[in-house]
Image (cartoon, rainbow, N blue to C red; front, side, top):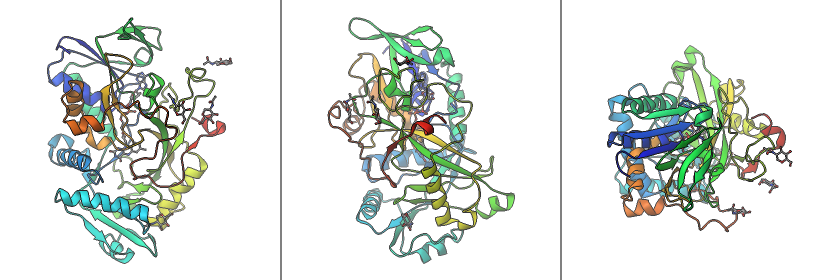
Length: 433
Ligand SMILES: Cc1cc2nc3c(=O)[nH]c(=O)nc-3n(C[C@H](O)[C@H](O)[C@H](O)COP(=O)(O)OP(=O)(O)OC[C@H]3O[C@@H](n4cnc5c(N)ncnc54)[C@H](O)[C@@H]3O)c2cc1C
Ligand SMILES: *[C@@H]1O[C@H](CO)[C@@H](O)[C@H](O)[C@H]1NC(C)=O
Ligand SMILES: *[C@@H]1O[C@H](CO)[C@@H](O)[C@H](O)[C@H]1NC(C)=O
Ligand SMILES: *[C@@H]1O[C@H](CO)[C@@H](O)[C@H](O)[C@H]1NC(C)=O
Ligand SMILES: *[C@@H]1O[C@H](CO)[C@@H](O)[C@H](O)[C@H]1NC(C)=O
């Protein structure tokens, strides 16, 4: 890749934007970002009012990377007004599965000499965090808290990154002429250009596919990714409640996958989500690729904002989790509910590698529901990966894998998911999206 070559990045989420920013700051002069919509993209996985920033991982490499990113969120003045510190609590019932996850995480933290605190009982937890008024769990409580964590206003972080890209000369094409529907290739299967929904063609030298949950609709990922929808709920708070809950920790029940965010100031809402197995959405007859593929993906045309819908079973789980910690809010109607897309890999590892089918197509993504926190450092690693300079252990972790192709359902996750098994959305549920 020389500095004058034309680099076409498909997708303006955190993977695409951080890469564009990094390459432009290294002196690449012709960087183009294409997207279905202007970033922050309303239904993109990188846009919302909040994302958790934590470095609690059961894997040494992710602890190290996430800690590095956390320090940047916390200390770099550019994230002032975007990053907010908060306590992170991970709890569950004593079960071999839950204990195993906490053990792995705390062992990895110990290895880095990063402090955390056991929560011995419900009583102790409530003493430390008096705002938690619910029953939590009894008996069989098990958990810990990490004081060093927080959350970021995701849409603001993305808007800032977009503007940083503009400042360095990155070009954007958004809307129908930025919506890629296919590739034009030569006899070596090298990509010459992309076709778009506007009927136009856009050529380039190198292509970086960072289209998140939509990526598997454009090229085969050989069963190494699965796009799944996850549920979100938002409850409106009064001024008094904003004050009352201002020190609410991020509370995660790993048995259910339910977790909350501290109150969000601009919107005055309390947001909750479930880090679970999610829902798949195979194409309906209206989807462009309906008759070609049965791969789960979100709808191609972006809505103006995330659709106010989750399946009924999901809404019930959101409410149950809220009752567990704040029963006084348990019956309050949701201001809004929504689905947001994960791009899962069997291991939960990201992908940063060249695609096996096309010599000039790089693929970056597969966030597996946990990539946002890496925003401050992601572009650096994408750039290393593009040049084949990733440290070996990361190159191994993030390689494109073809070996899942014939393995059936391999999406077992990294051990962090809770709740009921994944299921396909019913036709009447898909019709709502
Ligand atoms: C509910 C939920 C909660 C999460 N919570 C956390 C958290 O607390 N902490 C954390 O670290 N991470 C979290 N994540 C994960 C994190 O948000 C994602 O891993 C990350 O945002 C993925 O970024 P991306 O760039 O791959 O995808 P996206 O942001 O989705 O970007 C892909 C872009 O590609 C564009 N695109 C798609 N198809 C095309 C096409 N054909 N042509 C042109 N453009 C196209 C899309 O419009 C989109 O903007 C969460 C995710 C969800 C869904
Ligand atoms: C977590 O969820 C499980 C399953 O619903 C529940 O039994 C438990 O009480 C919840 N709380 C904790 C702290 O485990
Ligand atoms: C898919 O095939 C059906 C039946 O042949 C047809 O009616 C439909 O229009 C096709 N859909 C697309 C998006 O091409
Ligand atoms: C597509 O996948 C869904 C969900 O896995 C399944 O129910 C359906 O039968 C599949 N359809 C085809 C044509 O393979
Ligand atoms: C992926 O896995 C499914 C079964 O889960 C299988 O039907 C399919 O053929 C596999 N391969 C590809 C390339 O999708």
